[in-house]
Length: 437
Image (cartoon, rainbow, N blue to C red; front, side, top):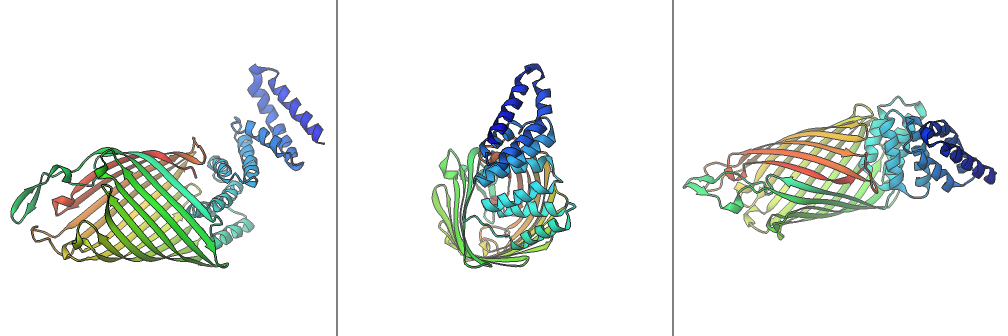
């Protein structure tokens, strides 16, 4: 049997090569036979030959042929432990066939193995908007309710070149109005533009304690680096705590340590305790609530030391297999040693994510208010801020290397403040790479 299959493959490839002028037509005629031949290789365990056939068909002119080849190749790669490459291929199948359930279900499993819990949840909500058979719908419900990353260690990295019109979020005003008159800002206190390197990394680990309880830990790094190091902004956080899942709900509790450096010097240290709850509302939506308490130590100004509480509520819903929208709201209260640095703030925002072929586009907007408890003695007014933020981003999966694809993100911020020092506007553009799924 094995020898006959080898001869069939040789014959098929020979026929394809007989007439270069008509090669595309002959490949088109041979494609179904090659798919069948690949399947025969799979049945007898000759996966290397099956892989070669499927790779020759990955860019076939017939959408059904290339999708089938990618689907089969992805399953072979997944069985060999090449999960990232398999996930990229399976995502391409889902991009070209957004209403097909099989590739999305396979993609859910691959993302689950990688440890991309957020990606799994997005795919499950997209699946819920399709017309699913009853048995598949029940499977999706069970996956949503029992989701827990099976990957003991997961790493996410994003790198970008980031031109920014205001790298220090500073005012463009020349003077600050005080009760003693106008004070001039020095040059370093005013807005600076620049091109920096943005790096974000997240390392996650999870250890199961029982069927419903696990211990999760993560370390994250967020850095904006510039040629002038006095504007470098680096933040590191480490956190650990238990996660408890029961039915459609999941609760997580963690303690965290955060260290921030500005200008390559220690700027602020924060200790935090938080809890979060996630509830699968229905097949298409989920609700998440986060609450935290923290204590903060500012190395530059002891008057800004203090403690705070905060909460964030997020609701996310899939409107189709390609469109997902989210709403969010937050409230924060910070009590500083000096009442002028004590603040109350709230924000609301929304984001819409849309798959357009092999690209995903996100559009988001946020509005926030902040009020200080009192004014500094030299200022005529207490601080009152109104911040508007708009974001447009896209991931282009047409290009994928080792599971990463090009991204672009444009952020526009405008903060109106009763104190000139906090008044600023900013446009930031990021060109980088991120996970392609």
